[in-house]
Structures are given as C-alpha cells and as structure tokens.
Image (cartoon, rainbow, N blue to C red; front, top):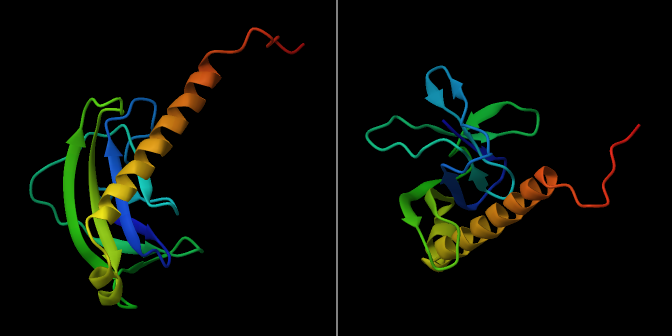
Length: 144
C-alpha cells in the first residue's frame, strides 16, 4: 500500500536497507509505504521483488485515505535501481511517477535523476545528524 501526500505530483522514491531508519510497517498483510511531503521515503526494510497487488492512495490531511486517481493524478511509471561507489552512499531504490496527463507529458528522465540526487542529499544529511547524536562533542557535559 502506497500512501502519497495529498495533492502530490512528481516522482516519489523509496530508498531501502538503510541502517538506523524505520522498517516499513505492515497493515492488513500489506507493507505500508507512507511518503513524506518531499516524496522521499528511507527505510531499513529490504526491497522486495516479485508480483504484488500494490494499491496507491492519497493520504489526506485528516489522516483518511482515498484512492489515487479521483482528480486525474495516477501512477504513471515505476522502476527500481541501485548504486554503489562514486563517493555516494550505496543504495537500492524504487520510484514512481505520480501525476496528470499534462505532468506526464511535460517531464523527462531528468526528473528521476533529480529525485535520486535529492534522496542522496537527504540520506547523507540524516546520517550526519544520526552520527552527531551518537558522538557527543567534547564540550558536552551530563546534566545534573
């Protein structure tokens, strides 16, 4: 089950097998991919391959869901890939394009590359924050 933020149009990406990030939860036997507003979901869960009956919903501001497609935005394309080396974090990922006919006809493959680059920046930033929390600076003193 994929939960897309209300009104989202663009590329959503899931980055898999990242230590220190939450696993994808299960609901009614389905993995739940709840994308944040930036469309970048990072999880410790492994990427799963094979046949699936994924359903995509729009997550409304009040927490309820409605099937994607009620306003012309639908899932247009989905793919997966991986990267290693080149000074970038190793990652496997999948992405989906969500949008109207007009949006779909206006984009090209650079949109996928752009979202992947955003995901790398987000992953590196979150990893840096995690390491800062684990390694206190020399000036930190325990509170009394």
